[in-house]
Image (cartoon, rainbow, N blue to C red; front, side, top):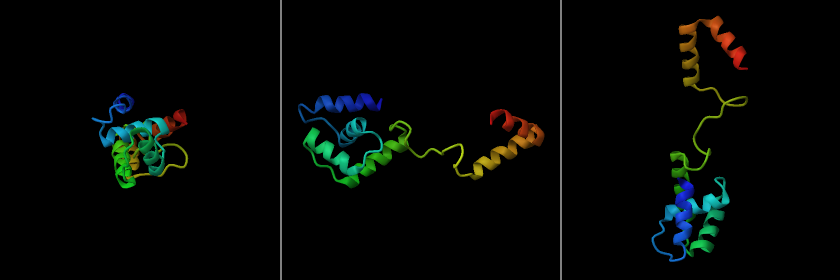
Length: 114
């Protein structure tokens, strides 16, 4: 969906009208990637749409897109696996499994999944 909006924004670039700031940011991130810095996004928008957006606005839109999950995996999700931090919700989930299945079964389950 974000890709379609970005393509729409680029198509509307010819006229220069009807392109929202959010669509310009989407188009820039679609082209530059979700990890693009606000300065790079600002430069892209200036060259492609001939509009200058403040970096604070770009950063705000980028954060909103991350929260909505429109940036393809970049966002507020937790990382799993080695090196991830342990959260209270994780411990509560394990405790629930231990209460339901028993500690031995949970250990066996972890061994199968590992």
